[in-house]
Image 1: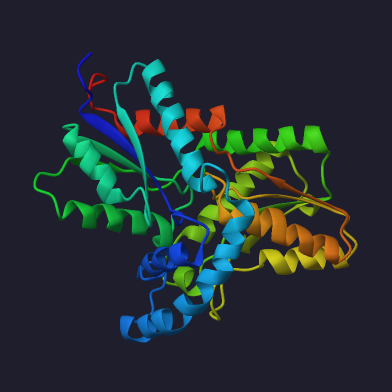
Image 2: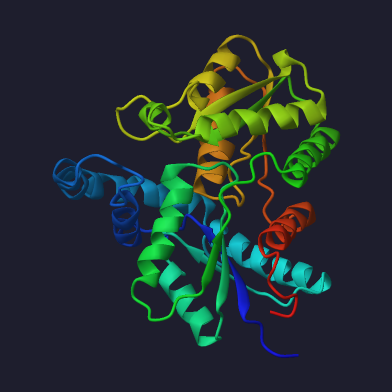
Length: 331
């Protein structure tokens, strides 16, 4: 069989090379320098970033990463590698001769390195899948920027297609619902199921980012699939940064309030994360669990991300099939 000339590039956020202050500083510098992430005027933000944030945050972040680091590295990176291999097999089983690679928006493996590997393999058609089901300028659009910036350094660019979002895709909704059902079957149904999404500043939504609408639509579709009554679930937003108001209700404040109000059990799922990472494994599975128990709660469960679950890989293969129509199956 001839080598493929079409490829899929899965792009997630990224992780540092090691759970150390030294490794966190360049990683956070790249991440927080992105104007899609922090859109303050550069003259105002960069002195704060380099004068304050990068002198304090790396140590705290390193401690958090140390809580979740595995023998083979950062969970986000290892899960992304497994997703890539699984998607290759799934596409091959469908008769689609398409290469699959992965990259990170920040850190390594970089978008530029992935594009170099694909160019060396004579790829001339490229489908980019930002691994964010709900569109946001801070994530999805930043991936677009990263790909465009990397391609400016190349002569001869591939035909390019880009998946914007899949927040209501039937296979995505069913994969989430099935994951929740399995968890309830194994651990019992909690009094409250929290759908926790990464937050963004409220201002972003006021200025036209559809992110909140997408989060609400995903939650509504999963709730409908599970036939959950209104009193058994709640949508919350996590991981806020800085002093500006972010989307509410905040996850940590809600979890504390539930415990103090006498709620004994909570389960949390993070539908916006396609692979488990610092924000799910440390913030939601550890820190907020401790918060719930400290304030009177009794049982707190984190439902893992879809990761390389077969239903998730089937969804990704469906997205590839949908967005590569018109490309030869023997690309």
